[in-house]
Image: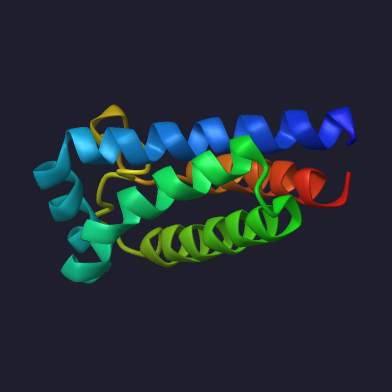
Length: 126
């Protein structure tokens, strides 16, 4: 087992766990913010739980390659959604980390996700 892959997978898993738990903690606020981002209400309600499960799977390293690829795909979807929203003059809050992220979407959110996608690639291939 490559130490770099374990560190990358654990770090990414912790970030997904934190993001999901933050959304669960502020559920009503999160769902409203997600809907403002264009996420269907039913999907928004499931996202935090999916993030928590994915984070745990990444940390425990169950099917590590598959988990890293799923994390990469999820981050890609989130990044596309952010980029799409950046075209709007009235940018909603990121809501990426629940009530911890109330600032309007910015290019910095894309940069953060690109860094996280890089970590997912390292977790997958290291």
